Image (cartoon, rainbow over all chains, first blue to last red; front, side, top):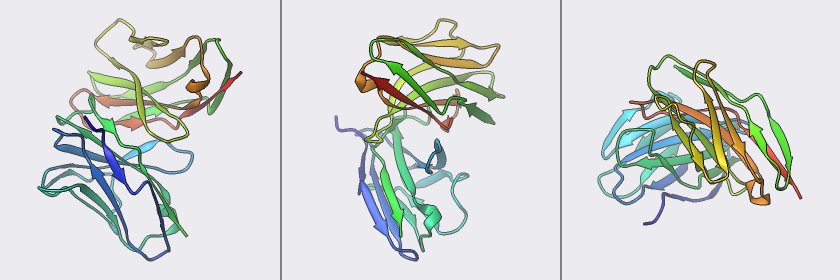
Length: 114
Length: 114
């Protein structure tokens, strides 16, 4: 059973460009969570999605950030007009139910904004 | 709301020795979970051990065990017979039992000295 997959693993963008981060949950998991890890910090919750629904985006910056989890295909975290402060590692986790007890993390995407 | 504090930014241990990483937390939840995650240089987040707050018995996974002091809101991780592969960042995390959000501490960087 393949784990949570994220791609790309590394992404470099110039200021003002768009970044698209992809997450494929584990087979059978319909709940996806995105976390951000800034340098020298722990992970911070951004958003929780189920198929075709955003359940909780309370941790997501109000502007430039959006997330989706379509009926088919991976979950996408999209950052428009990136700035240097967006440089971070972005982790996706998935679970079979809506709970923290069984969240499985992907390897993360390291975004560098130049 | 949950907060997690790791007061040791860095620790080191001799190979084959024992080390304890500290974590304190605060929560308004009556039932909650506590976790220790390992993040090696690959940055993959790996669940090391988890504890359900209503269980009095300390969780153990092979060389890893916790000392859960509920009244003191303390949740330390003990690594016995340390190995070179244990070198990593270790994050303490918490969540409400019915919640999906994990709250992480800032981490402790563990070095293992051969």
